[in-house]
Amino acid sequence: MEIWINPACSKCRSAVRLLDEAGAEYTVRRYLDDVPTEAELREVLERLGLEPWDLVRAEEADAKALGLRDWPREAAERPRWITALATHPKLIQRPVITADDGTAVVARTDDAVRDALSR
Image (cartoon, rainbow, N blue to C red; front, side):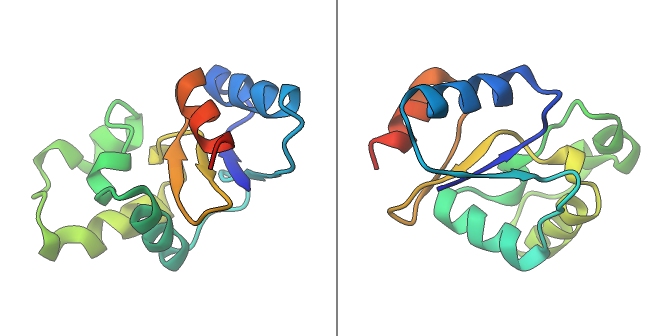
């Protein structure tokens, strides 16, 4: 199990605390320092069952500067969105937990963390 976190994020700290309390074995990835590649993002999106625009933090300054709200949300535009996430990792919704069963969750709630632990 791996968790992508920003240590400054309260939801990330909460998810790590829950993993620790459960005695889970996991690896922490500080994704702002160890930025996911486009290939890794495609893999995580597949595991999440999401489109790249579903993983974007739309209120981030980078999102506003790029005008992401106006970008088309269609299959042909997926590469453009993935490139934006890889180039501007602050845009990635967090925390993301990749579960041992090959799935992943955006663990913004305690229930989502528990769900990842149950996989």
